[in-house]
Length: 125
Image 1 (cartoon, rainbow, N blue to C red):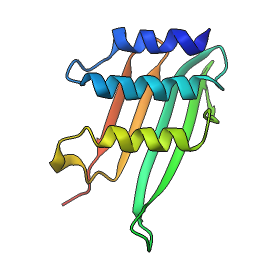
Image 2: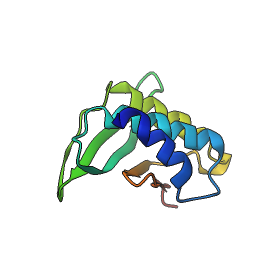
Image 3: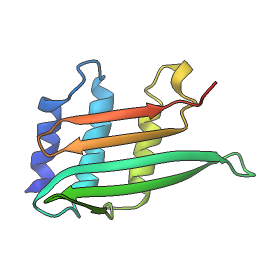
């Protein structure tokens, strides 16, 4: 049941009305992936994704952390498939204005209430 209820809540409860439909769709898919392995009493799901330069083939080197908060305790969370959140973050990044696409990290919080927050960290200077 959790799998089907959460995406509908996100559509209705998005915190930022400026988000495009495509961005909401991406966060819905991300939420569906994360909630699969979350405990029933979860309150918040989060993904922290940071870029750590490029490898010798020009591909982004990344660090991804998935967390769940439930009953006042925050713990690591195993997503439905490990690569799905990373691919969704890159897809979400493509919706940003061109001048903001050089971000170095993003923190996505998804709340059981259906609200979500996305915080892009831009390079300094």
